[in-house]
Length: 410
Image 1 (cartoon, rainbow, N blue to C red):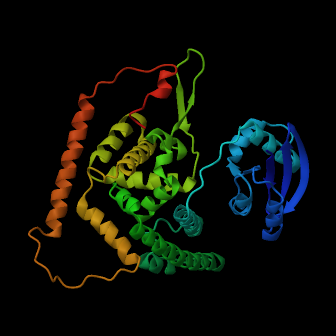
Image 2 (image 1 turned 60 degrees about the vertical axis):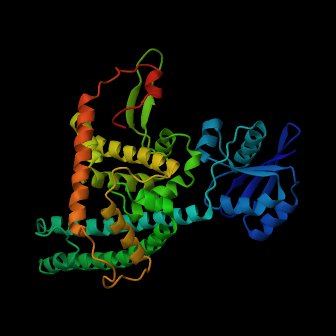
Image 3 (image 1 turned 90 degrees about the vertical axis):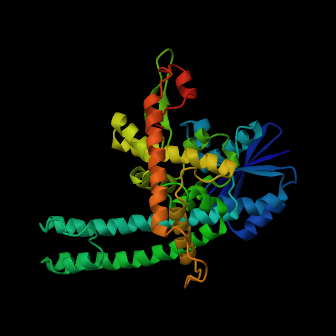
């Protein structure tokens, strides 16, 4: 049995082979379909290939996998942790991958299925477009600040009223041209984001798991799809703590000897777009009537608003893990609001609008249902406050016990 290490690049792959306890370099292979197919045919059926996960690694692995026993796509960060800070060249990296593979020190990263890859590409693209739009809007605000125009009298500077107000502001010619250019970019980016939102809505219609996540407070189509894209298969996370750590919402921990554990800022590992939408969802959840609002206020009273928002995001992730694992909706969901969110996604995906009321008139109007559901959510909020007030802490954990225990602000 041989172990093949491949240091993958855009145009070529550096190859090394471990066999019978010795490792040797085997040159380079061009990263084209024809050259990769020819290289794969030269490998044995019991060979194992190891490479770091990168932009084109998945496509290279797909070309090689039918011809070998196994292809391992390794986490680059974990590979660098094992190699340390020694010299780094393509040849040395390929040889190191072959040796680590032979020693069984490379753990394969999880490979998402095609629906999950589609969701990840959609959410990642949307995240980048929103960031571009924010930069353009910030340039407009900077122009107003430079020219002492003050704060706009309306909340949305880029709506119809805001643009009318912008048009009346006396600005130097170059600054006015900058504002016009930024507004054109904002319009273009808005159109692109709308196209992606339509594709996201199609994901909502096609996935029962995404619709289930939309029952959480603060979760719309984008947030639910983003979280489902990050999770993929929830069964790969043995506990909600593993999912929280994967999303980078767990605090860094430093502990040595008899000293108590010290918790710092969140680790910020994993996909950045996932944390971004989770924090946005947490901000909305903190304003919605229900237990999440009470939880956020309780943490904010002890740790501040920013920590409270992250704590709510982490709590939402924990609840989402239980919902997906058990196949249950959020216990304190407001059915009318959830149905509205799902219906909005269906309409964006191209569903026909319902016209007329052909059936029997409902005994309770939609407005009355919303009021009753809000009252139930308020009762759940009060119940949580009472539970938190009656809760008695078990005492401060020290040493390794702090690592095993849970923080109520997490």
